[in-house]
Length: 213
Image 1: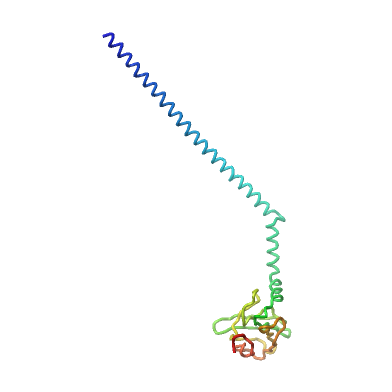
Image 2: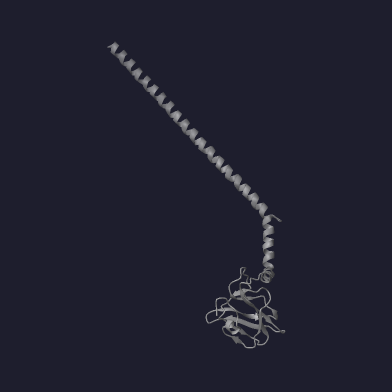
């Protein structure tokens, strides 16, 4: 009996020893796993921190660039000033283009009002009114193209069909200066409008239009 008890006690001690050993082994494995996981999380944290720092630096740089762009006498400030200047003087700029640009492959006319009074001038057909307005005395800036469009078109260039109707408010006071196809700058024909309405003006004034009889 004493021997059996002694054996049981030894076996019991061995069981607890093995159990303790397994617990130590499992604890070591878990510790290694936690260390690896901690290392991975730390690495991810460092990468995220570097990413956030880089974005913050970029934002600071962009803010500095924006401040520099909006500062007085900056490039953007000068650009806005130049745009406003051109907008304010756009009328004169378009008139300069009208005066400089003359393509002999096109056909157009301009309107000249004599005297001291304004005169109403209209170009239209059955479906469309291409121009209708009061013109001041002198040579108007508008060019009415009845054959081909200009290469550089401004707000003073109006495209009209040669079959359109021309009407005036003051007869005898309005002249049409035709710049014929194939010639440059000087008018090839000057017509005084002694009637209020001229239908199919190209045929009425015997204008040369390539490809038409």
